[in-house]
Length: 449
Image 1: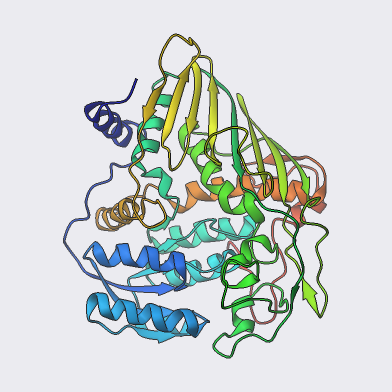
Image 2 (image 1 turned 180 degrees about the horizontal axis):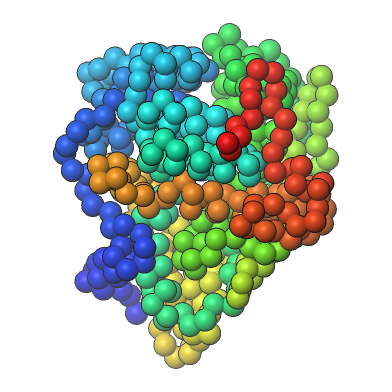
């Protein structure tokens, strides 16, 4: 059977009231906040457009190390609002000179920690993209900084406010799925072998040294004519482990977050992951050329109290055999299977095959089938009412850790036992060294004082 509109609204309201997640309302037309964007690429502009449409942001400044992104983005903002935001290359100059009240951090993963911490310490509330950090200790430092500064930090895990996810969460937590014993999360997209890309001089509009920042300075291999071609910048960085954590660190955070948000769990007890690059081929990095180095497929198993999570992704073969969505997670309970999907919504399949599936239809915004609008409304309300947002930095720190622990096990080639209270690997000094990394040059790794 299909969920009626009345059923859906009832479930959504119940989820907001009874499941420790605040209800999402339209943003009140109140205070207008001096707002700045750090990272003016594709996704950063998706967020900023919704901030402008909400009517409570005056965009005072924008920052990007690549003028090819910054200049057209600033021109679009001026066309939308009539205001001409100041343009900066270095986020530190922006924070010092403009004193924004809200900062959007939409840079590559390796920058999230430093920029978020600097912004809250400068007095701003922050909307930061997922994953919150590149290493686990960065994430804890971000939580500490947000709490110390008493600032709201919302993370861009917008599936926490997607209507079918909210209704599906209420359905599961009400007991209709029964006892959950296992969850399977996955991302399956097509692909094939990877050819090395030639290293070239960075374009004159790009400060490549500052783009790399605290991470290693790799040769530049981008292609301005084709941003999806596999070069590091602007959109290929997630497959380069110096700057991100592959598919598990990218897509995986959404589904790990759904699992923790729905079940109420905080951390796994044990993690094992394996995978590799049998299709893409061995990673290459020379003076002349390079490939990405993230695994083209990966399997991770996370053991929680009372249930087990399996993760799998691949970048070959697609998902034609399963005839379903290429992303999502399946919750397996004693009363049936609940598929929490994306563009096709969610479906409950009862154990009793005589009963019809229950469908939760998606309500997604264009472009890119997301719910940034609703998450931004929650962010504003959290600022004004001085409460924690629905995608609070600490909650998504735990979700991010699930992905990072999977990558840590993958790099080590063995399982790890995790102490979630202390946030350390039990009895494994080699593994604990990977909870942080050495920063390059002038950049200082954030510490929890």
